Image 1 (cartoon, rainbow, N blue to C red):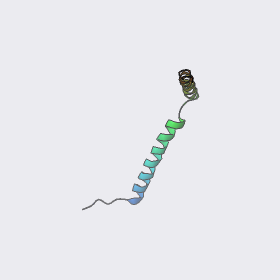
Image 2: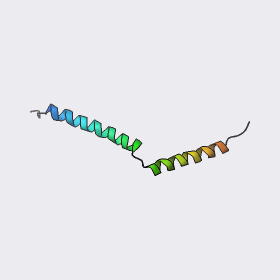
Image 3: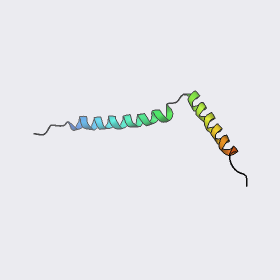
Image 4: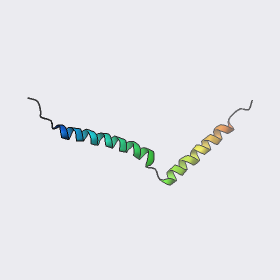
Length: 58
């Protein structure tokens, strides 16, 4: 015999799972401190300068 499933609980569980996935993505995108963001910007600028310095003039 099949197990009885409460559709309300299943729907809420699905919603919670989707919300957790969204929260995980938001934590990765927005969960950095100001110092981490500034360090990443400095590193990106350093890499860009290195790339510009390596270009050949034509």
